[in-house]
Image 1 (spheres, protein in one colour):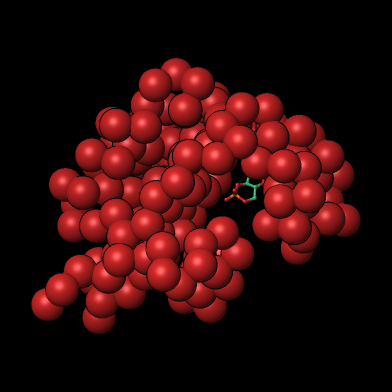
Image 2 (image 1 turned 120 degrees about the vertical axis):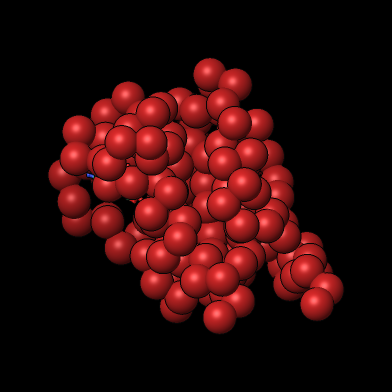
Length: 142
Ligand code: CMP
């Protein structure tokens, strides 16, 4: 089933010029980029995006990191995009990520873990609309 998911290439990866490699990997595996923007997140944008983690001890550190330098925001589309993206990314903590996944290859730590991906179709819809207006998303013509 064709689906959309939301992806962020995080500051640690953008700073190391890994944008092209990461997008290339998504495209090679059948995930099409249907919306894309480079943005230096404002504090309120990072806090709103990660609101579900507000009570966690790492929330402040997470928002500091996500506002440190620009990120690459994307909507990706393809068959089972949510699960496929999570498989390509690997586990949140790179120490637990499978060989060949983006986080195993590039992540520095559980905090600086190079990419974010939606964990469900409902989260994907919420996250895409948090950052993109509908008219900024370009589904592939069948
Ligand atoms: P992400 O998929 O973007 O969603 C929430 C983020 O919180 C997660 O990736 C991690 O980068 C971050 N995170 C999770 N656990 C920790 C932790 N123990 N310390 C710092 N950051 C964390």
